[in-house]
Image (cartoon, rainbow, N blue to C red; front, side, top):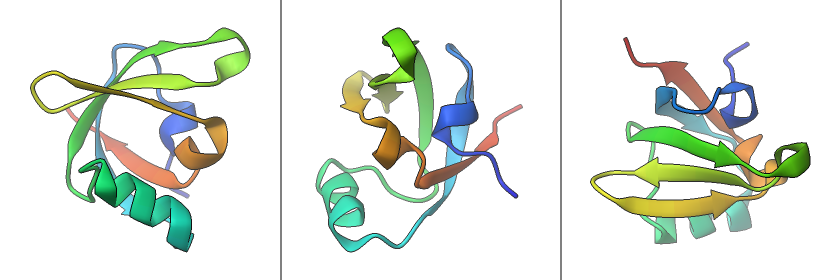
Length: 78
């Protein structure tokens, strides 16, 4: 089983390998420009791990809820 964004540590860079097929969530992520193959970094996690702050690209920052983050499978970038 591939790790998802909830498994990623702060400061770790990862590549999105799959976004689970939940239509509304997938559309929301696509509308933000978050796509399979993109590289992202977890910049912080709030108390109890929700929401997660991610850096996407050259300075785009987003906050994701746990339920959305759990749908995003990732691989670590060396």
